Image (cartoon, rainbow, N blue to C red; front, top):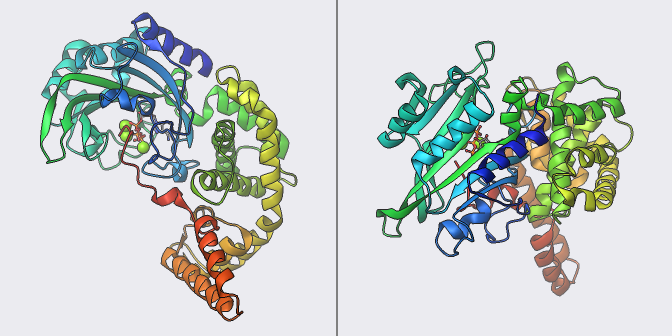
Length: 470
Ligand code: ATP
Ligand code: MG
Ligand code: MG
Ligand code: MG
């Protein structure tokens, strides 16, 4: 059975042999796009090439790109622990053609790799195309011999990709693997497509148009290809697992957290181990790429991820900080492919430890308050905004952590009430300062607090208009 590391190698070797320049992953913090929180797709580092602003050294490339989808337009934070296929950090395998080959070659390569190299049975695969893309449908029939029932036409933007309001765009075609009848979920385009039976493994984007500012869409003289396949998802398929969290790497990470906590990864405890393993990866990779926990922007997304993991460690009854003790296992497993992890190991361990120690003192007390407040609520109930705000302001619980905590009980949080409580507290604080006779200092202090204070969570709102695969 191929390991995660071997599968990454097979993908890159295949495209290397097919004359693609194999390039290393770019860092998670985007180098060319200040509007984007984190690199969230393999094409992001090539954006300027696709728009024509830069000329590539070679017309074809392949990579395994580190991606984080936590915050911004693509936010899978709330899926982790709930679906079999989502991580906050994952690797996106991709092959790219910069005005070189197009649809036919892209479909040919994907099909050859999946059924030739990886030997997946054809009957387990099905594809989607954009509803007007007759060309792609005909090519799938010709190259893969798929019947009409296995080529599903999708009329929504799920199968039409665009870089932003203007710029390159085009239809896409997604390849799904059917994990079998035992698993709930319907085929793409059906009402229960979000289940985990039919899992999207690979997205082929055909950049054939350019969207102009006036609303007109013109054909590109040299269309391009951008593809993305989740390494962990194809690894699950190749390792005979339906669930990403049962692949070799996650088994090792979860075994380490089982050993350190003494709690089996079963029943109600299983999701906590998964969340911990997932968040350990995103936290460590973000730290290795220079993000530090803070109260705003990227640093606040990192802090939220770390604190969510720490709450799950608490749920498992961990008496001592846990995350930093798991980091060496991750570095051992992934450090060869990503040497930056090895270089940063000591600082990853230290930052995880400090953050956990810092949060620990208020975490337990906050959980006590939360238990008290939710004890009187039943499924479908709403936690009041005042309590959510107190948890945030006094105990350092990011709003999404509280939402995650109550979700397990079938509850939601009154976010309007949370906002109102925050507003009220700001006004009161302002009034107190105003009465203290130090107006000048107060004004300066408030402008600083509003800039960097605990209230600034860019993570949810940041507009990301560029560089994402649908
Ligand atoms: P899904 O519909 O399952 O959320 P997606 O359509 O959002 O996936 P794309 O944006 O098309 O995903 O990304 C390309 C590929 O990257 C997907 O086909 C999938 O294999 C993988 N992928 C996307 N999001 C995740 C994630 N959160 N964790 C792991 N792999 C992912
Ligand atoms: Mg998605
Ligand atoms: Mg999808
Ligand atoms: Mg997709």
